[in-house]
Length: 156
Image (tube, rainbow, N blue to C red; front, side, top):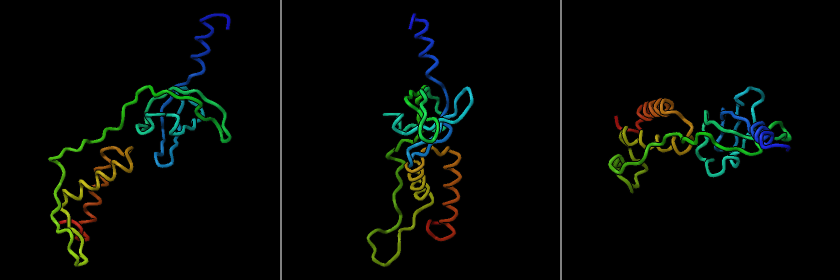
């Protein structure tokens, strides 16, 4: 490089900007849509380092690209806005108490209140699929409560 300006221009041209458009936390990979358009870029969970558990669609990133066996992939990456998907904090007062008897050996299971069932479902959804939106969690919860109620799995 002949000058500092050329060096800066080279560094700027290597890093591209984009947004995570899909990310499968279970499989550990996803894709970035380049801000300037073009082919989506493959990204692995390990490319996010310590932030890999915070990856969500819409997350803005800057990255360097390299050619992989199946197309373009991230060579290195930095997160522009490491905002996590909001997760509700557990509050001791909000932990439901079970209404059913435990330890009975009559072949029957506990019947939960709708509040208890909703709490359990919400915790499971947040743990298993943290990329769900609040509206999606709410919709899924309601459908599951209705289904459980129709089978007598929750109190009416």
